[in-house]
Image 1: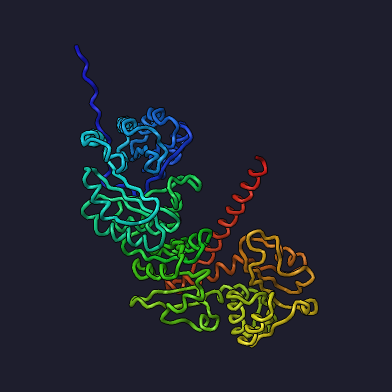
Image 2: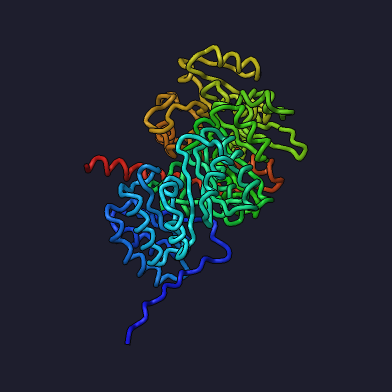
Length: 525
């Protein structure tokens, strides 16, 4: 009696694909599958990047066992050749053989790049599709261009999904990608996004424009493409599963913005107050690029940071009195009619923490600095009746600000003779490393020391002030209060100040721990 050959039945795709696919890498098969094990429960959609393995064929048996014991997992097998931006250095034939074996191991989707498809016979691709869904992919590592033309080339090869990934060199490239998805996703199953730091808009909003799903990394440092966001951040910070056509878009715009804490704090507030909105870091290399996105996406609210706080003014239809006096705007609201209104909430960031501690009327306040942050402090406190002294490294800007605000400028030599209720550091001295201080210990004669710097959480100035017996107000309070005021302006709701402070404090602690770990690791080596 001749035994029948077992018939392979492909694992079916779910009717609704998960929105986030996590790219899994590893130095060897055991590490790759261990990562998949740890991810599967919270991330049922995984991409096995076989090309990251020195000998990818050795992983297939482990992947089969994993998928057999995790039937709810949807898996993509990718073995991208080096010529197409991957790490696999084998031939097209060996690539196709590996993907066929990955399909037999239980992977429901296979990723084949266009460059490989052009070197295949039609029956080779058809054979792959007999056991799994085919994703035909194209990557442009330089720019976002010719999307329609690229899709037409790809349509010559029958596939279940067409994936076009480009590189955003401007924020507007995201708009190009999303308009393409909106136009074509009704006709074809598309996956589309932009790589790079400036591509974050498409990674989060692409799914509402028509991309079937987006990609995420396992953790920071494990990205398989530039600008990839971690799966945890996509879900918990950006709430990608809830993003829909009604989701309002907010963001922090500046150059640079990579390390901004604003997305963490603002998305926490939106989540806490159940606002259907998402807040993104927008690396705007030009103001023209930013303003085009405000109109086209559209963006409903912006936090403006360096270097655009003054330059943005000419693009606004109206501003509040604080913005006019200070000559700088850190908050923009886009009204229903498309008009842009500017506010400055840095004043709230200074005034609110102080009001909680002492009466400001007739309070003697020394402000260090004469830039935008100092101007916000000076005008905000002047409105509350405080008496203001201004000290700056160069006397001219301090004298000019003092004249405008009806305050007094002083020389550093006078500090030892004066005492204040509050000293406010509105300079960047001490930022980053925390080792520098704008004042010496014997110049800190005050009841309260308010340092606007929040990273590091404790600066040298703060430490010296504590040793002198002053009460210290950390810069994180200013950051949270100005952000809370922005939230109120945008949403009309009271800001969850306690939650915002909690989230930003935890994030700063995590960053400090990561810096220390990296520092210690370097020393050990």
